[in-house]
Length: 94
Image 1 (cartoon, helix red, strand yellow):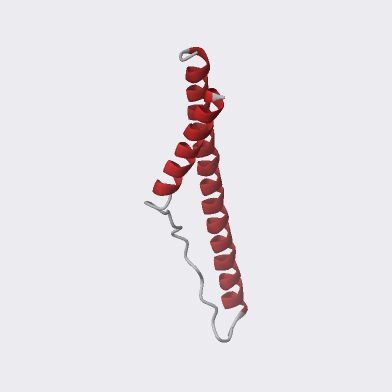
Image 2 (cartoon, rainbow, N blue to C red):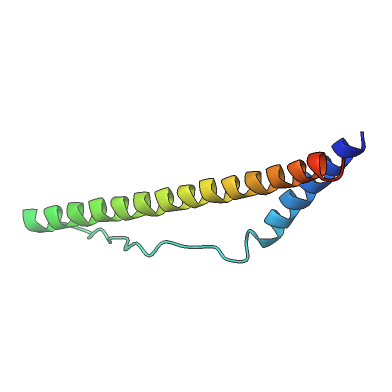
């Protein structure tokens, strides 16, 4: 019973601590958003705009992928810390 309370307390503490610092640094992308002209006057302008749109899409996709990878790494680190604590409680304190 005491072990369960300790685990719940630690998990709550870790979850709360992560939330307290989660917004201290919010990365943002540095992608260039193309401006669509009011009217295209040549096929070159259409092609150029479409190329810029594709570059913008790729930049956003890369940024999102990087952020999702960071989430995976942080989640793994939190899980490992919780496991380390639980092992300490189970093997060292008992």
